Length: 369
Ligand code: V47
Ligand code: SF4
Image (tube, rainbow, N blue to C red; front, side, top):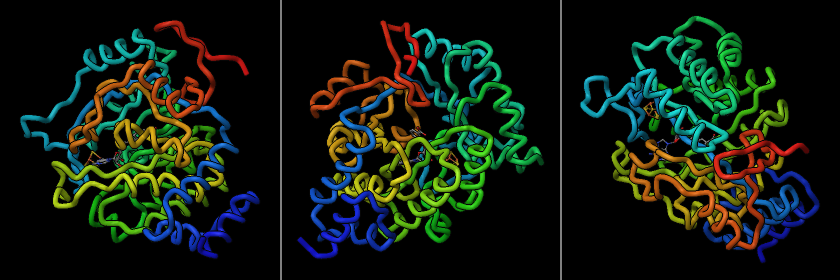
């Protein structure tokens, strides 16, 4: 084996942090993918043993109208597009009821940057859902949306988050991070909150005691250096706050986007990105193989490349399916458990904050530690 790889393996085995240069090396095509995966699996096992987590959740997208027109996006529409939608209060509550009565512990709520809806509209969605279904954890609004609320409501991120928490917000999802490098960001999502603002929102959230996730979109115009830069910036913030729970690498789906000339990332890149992320983010407890984005087959394989979480049952997903994801719309609890058991590991249902959940059909309770 290459001496550089041996040096990295020694560091990982000794529990030492690997450097940006080490991470860039591990992304090289001529470095054996399985050897990188084995190292990531070692780190994963140290942190999470034999357990693979999943949750019972649903997605709610209140609108697909968005003024940002990111080149990476197949989901957003202009207001006058016949496929544009804005859900009314009744529909939002109906989807919340379906999730709560179906036994979901979490509702993942994200939309678009609507040109005419004020912050209060987004705030009321959280309030109404929380009042009607107080046990449903609301993981709502990406840092992109929070930064927009602060800008348009002319209030600080802290005040916006305080209002949302009072209304029932439980945590922040990891979306909107894309890739932090300003040049690539300028190509794929020029108007979105930039790296400083994205990280700033999460920093304030963590300071307030909120937990959040982080993502990275890969397999478009970026290269390994950009991916490593992204991971290093996340690692630095996590060193300061410790507020991130889970990292989710998101495999780019080009179909129906303005980047549709690209081909979708290979399973090799999917698995390598999972493994290198696990190795770089030594201060993150969890790395998620989001089966919607990877497809169930690659997600299951990724459990041997550093991932310890598959996300959830999901229900009706629009963002990745709009961009050509071939994964099913939903997986049952039994299907998720079978995927995990087939790898020889133990499936554990968690809630959003990684408490274990005991379940009997749609009835559930959080296990006391
Ligand atoms: O930020 C958009 C990505 C994200 C495409 O926090 C695309 O637990 C691939 O962040 N191809 C939203 N990806 C989804 C997200 C997420 C998903 C699951 C769990 C969590 C969590 C967060 O989806 C966006 C963007 O990075 N996305 N378009 C596309 N064409
Ligand atoms: Fe809007 Fe998000 Fe799509 Fe960008 S990725 S156009 S911010 S919905």
